[in-house]
Length: 104
Image: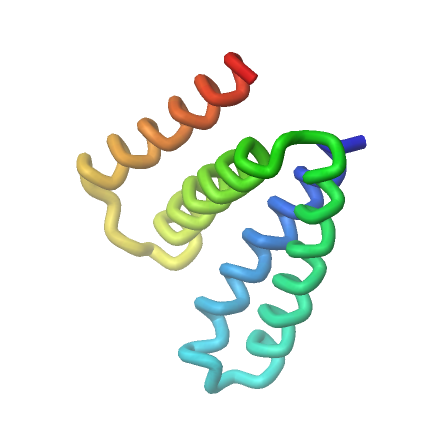
């Protein structure tokens, strides 16, 4: 069940990040409200995840995968820059999450 809560928390966190981008600095009402509601729900599900896994592991996986996902979505949806440094950094984060989970 912990993986289900973690996955839900990840999806909600990523959706919240997308709403932050769409809110244009919290000037657009609907995406702003969406961001706050999604982040509240995200925190709730991440807190449930800590009942199943160690807190440090949960937050490292959640933060790493949220960063990777929002970076890739930014590149493909919002046409943000894509360069070698960004791709290497994302690859290192993914590698770190895999190693962390492999030895946990």
